[in-house]
Length: 315
Image (cartoon, rainbow, N blue to C red; front, side):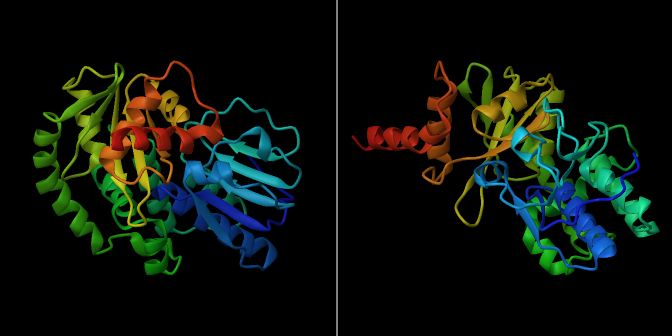
């Protein structure tokens, strides 16, 4: 799709959680610099924080975050691949669920003369990893690239590379990912498949102690090692925030993530839990209470819900 007369953005906004968001965001920064000669600021958000941020700018480019009614504004450009029910009336939308956000952004960049063999390769590997194209011969290598962001985190890598994402190609840190995958993943799978506990009748919590959580959960689902259609893992970031990652095979993961005010893809989704949820055991209690409730609480009641749980635990 040829896009001309792009609006000059006040900000570029991307998804913080993965390689796709990093690649897409940096590419859009380069495109803005090429078109307007400006270094447009880049912001990155997890789903929950993004939903709480007001789209206040007169013009913005948004990528790897679902197109929704509040983004349908004049002079806003959204480039994304998540399922959406919103039809653009005012915003410009580039949308294809069969391509990663990084690939969509790169195709737009190529229309304006931005491209290189290095970017060709990195964007392809990102596409394979983000769409989980298991049959691709580079799937394992692509997964190692994706793991870099999961392990070292978005802004740490962005700083390390000084925004030059091509430097990820054949980076020494990939050797760490390869060793972790070869040694840790089999150990982690053997342990985790024996340590799945119920969150709700349809959601199981997979405790993880070592290895790539996403690949371990995928293997459990593939081999039918769990009766739960949705499997959930929990990760505590260095700032204390708890991240829930959900996986499924038949589209159920996104439905659960949306109950947690998160988002993502049908079978690969995630959410950031309220800051009052401080530990993984707290998160398990919180999720059991929320996902076994007969109705979804309003957005502003999430903190109160957990506060009530916390009081009950101390009583």
